[in-house]
Figure 1: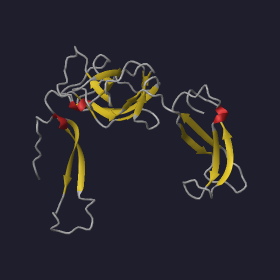
Figure 2: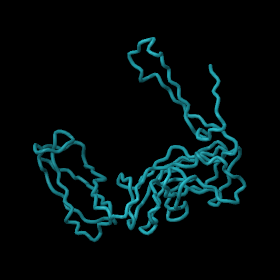
Figure 3: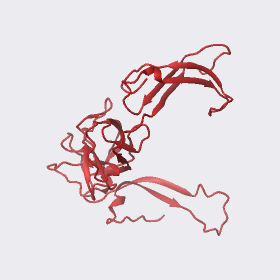
Figure 4: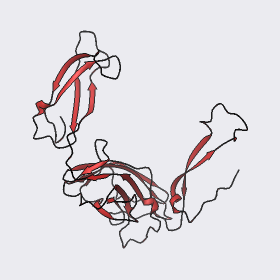
Length: 272
């Protein structure tokens, strides 16, 4: 047994964190495998004045991009986990907490310049049955997935050296509790803001076959969804042509056998 001590002055480790242990023989005892010498456990560190914390979070700008262009509309998808580490239950209602997106030239909102890109209650779509307005009991967490932030083409501001898109769990003024420790309320992702309009990137987002086994000389149905990185509605869908091949591996080369073509028609703003 060993006592674990925390440093109250290091707010970076307040809230949901991990405690790790590594066993090292310093080469005194030769080991055949050192990959299993580490173990990790989740733990919540309670710090005075801490109310909220963000846990594991992911942000998808779309099509795996790490850049945004001015004049282009985007749908940003967010997954996050919110922790209530306050000593009592938190009040329901949008006036009590908000998930806001900022553009920033630092991976924080405490230094440099920021621009509020979108707040929780403007142009945001939540999955059915999920709401950020739920009250959180003390010690509880809420996992929210597939939050859709719809960013209009004119929302990206002029260049101020923004290099990050930052998610911040904010408390409006006037609530009966203030989150003194803010370092664990923020998640940041690198993001380049560009003026030049992007080229078209066509991506295969779905590829399904009706049957896992096909009898030789038989036929089966194949469905393909192709998505464009910009609005393609004014383009002739016949310009997009999908070609099917038989292959012995998951790569295409000159030895593979062409099997057929599929022409498309637009089903939505970006997909065919």
